[in-house]
Image (cartoon, rainbow, N blue to C red):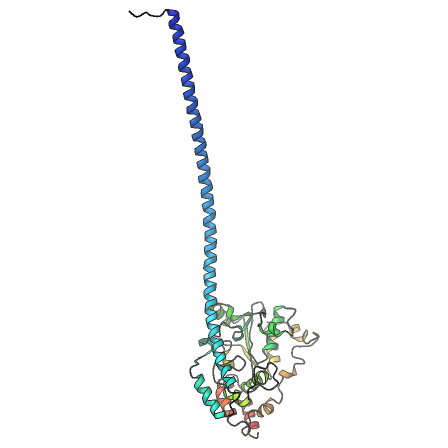
Amino acid sequence: MVMLPGKKNTIILAVVCLFCLGLYLNCHLHQTYVKNEAFVDLMKVQRELEVLKEAKVGDIMKEMEIQNDKLKQLEKTIEHDKNYHNENSNSIENNKIINNEHNKMINNNNANNNDKVELDTYSNVKLESYYDTLKWKEEHFSPIVDEKHKVVVCTIAKSACTVWRKFMRRLYGYKDWNTKDERITHGYGGKSTGLKYLSSYSPQEAAKIMNDPTYFKAAIVRNPLTRILSAWKDKYAPGSVHNWGNIKWDSFANSIHPDCRGDEHWMAQSCFCGLRKWEYDMIARMEDGMPALAEEMVKTGHLSKDFIATGWGDNGNEAFLQTNSVFHKTDASAKAAEYYGFSGYPGIFKHMQNAMQEDIVRFGYEESVQEIKVAAAGK
């Protein structure tokens, strides 16, 4: 028989049970709260990480896009430089071929043999016209562009190019435009002319400029026969200024060929500046047309009158070409005839006349060449 506790004991037991139940529930609820709070904190941290991740990914994507654009630009630059290097290397190699042949002539006194050697050698050097050669990328074969004054000027080696490059540098506003440093004037030896050439534009941009009637386009040329003679005197004659070697005049002259062959100093002028393609407003002859060219630029509104009236010369108080008599017409024909003499240098005049026929006709030098011929007949 089970003994039931008394009422008092029952109450005490119930209270104890309720107390224990309260303790259990309190502990359970506290643990649940702590877990929930930790879970909330965890979720908060995860959300913050997601936001940070999205922001970081966005930054990374932007940086990747920037780097990708730079990479594309670099690839274009590399491709451009590669093409330029290949083109320039080919041009240099062509010049090397010719200069090597010139050096071979030094000890060869037989003019006929020289002709044969040269013709055989150059038969594999095929350079068509200006746009078929690789000269387009080279500054010296491209006209100078002044966008501010809307002037395009073609300067050709041995055709008063130094004068006109200085002219354009002054037009650009360079204070050292009259520098004696040829590296600046001609852009070599790590120096820059600071001028912008048509070759720096895309073909489409170049065509737009050359077809724009608001641009004044001019080229300066020279009698082909006196120009080539000047190149020889400057580079190869005994006591020459630049002393590229010691080559006799007849050997040098017989090496000259028509079209775009050889160094820029004796290559046909028709090869420069797209003269076979573009239409120029004025072709100024070095012997008698340079002052007129400057005046025409003033008349057409591209230059101020003061620009050519003063500021020139070593002291800056002269007009343009005021004392540059070396570029004025003199007895050039009589002087040139000494080197084209029929007796002294037989066959030279005829060879040069044939080689430079395009320049002679294109630039209107028929009369001047005839004067040389007449004078040379007695030499």
